Length: 132
Image (cartoon, rainbow, N blue to C red; front, side):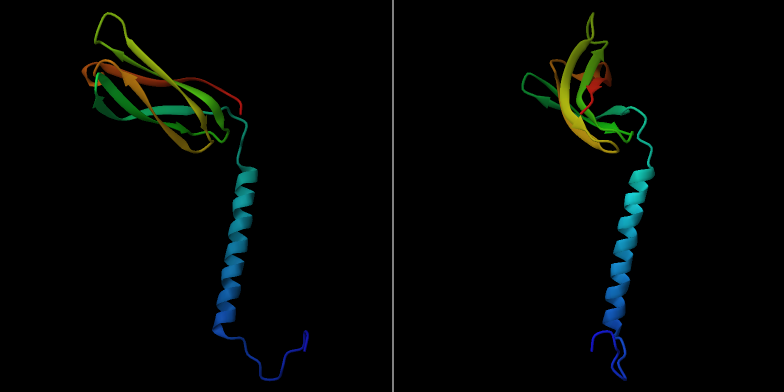
């Protein structure tokens, strides 16, 4: 009993499998923690905004976009501005604020325009953020 082995006791394959799975999970968790700890967090958030599609709506157009944060730091209150050039004397501008874009991830949103952005040159950009 206790720590003594009984004579003739042999571990079954299921015990070995359970041990191997436990070891793999433990090593994977430790690796993920080490990767997060060693990942540089010094740089500012880097937000890239890309248009996904344009949808006609009653009285206007919706430009759906994805804002990707390539940096490790999270950005809050991300201001996204879109402008359509070449459809009039001045650019048509629309803006939206995203609550946050976590580091290494993306967030989707949309901008409304009274003109078809496909008839001009559409520019999307992040104009600012705050620290969470």
